[in-house]
Length: 300
Ligand code: GRG
Image (cartoon, rainbow, N blue to C red; front, top):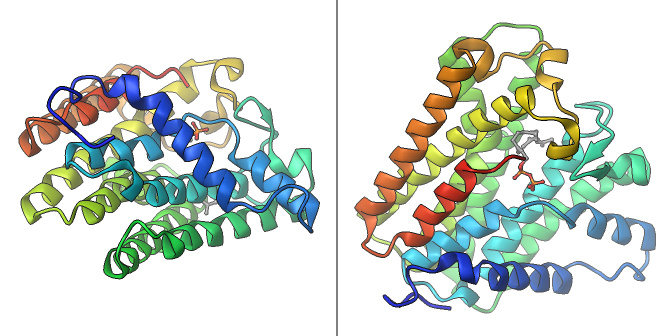
């Protein structure tokens, strides 16, 4: 799975193998659904099913570009998906977004109950740090740096803080700068950290780390703008989650501040900038370029 020049143009062909690796690491880490308490463990697996696994693919794509073998990326790919899954479960709870549908299926608190939803999120979060702490593929220094980076990205200065600001912003009109800052934390921090984790696995140079961070920041913001656009134009069946929620909750969004066409243009510009950052980093950045194209073309 390590990068060679002949392999470098066919990342898409390796995506199924990477998704298999993710499935195997997650299945091996989480206790079996038959392990006591069965209902909790079954619900944890339910919460991890489905989804596009873009964050795990970003870890593999960034790692490949830097020549890192896949076994050194597995724990990070698994950890970011566990944090992401936990955030979705908690975001859907009645105290937050109160949603019934996620990934085309009932949300965890609907399929189980609210207490299970809270506990599933808690347990997935701790599992994310467990997989990083216990992997044998990385040295101790890399593991500690990864744990620290993921904790920072997902905590109160990152994703959780962004969620708090988002909730406090309902029924308010934000400036564009405030909206970008909110989303840099809520959605962007976890996307950015996928690149940082790959950089740690590679012991990357400062120059490579900076280019990777520019890529991650651009993708993170472009992803959120696209999410706002899709919330406005796509239907619930395509999205697999309730469409039109931003308007219903009176939230400031990129289309509400910029208009739909300008929001799309801003996202496209950011995808272009991400590709530039990838190219500036390496002649073998095809995995990152492919992933930027793939995310740009998503419809859900
Ligand atoms: C509750 C602590 C806490 C945090 C919640 C990320 C987040 C913070 C909430 C999710 C709300 C939301 C829908 C944000 C828009 C961006 C986003 C994270 C979309 C879902 O990500 P995808 O499309 O999901 O990668 P899949 O299902 O493919 O994994």
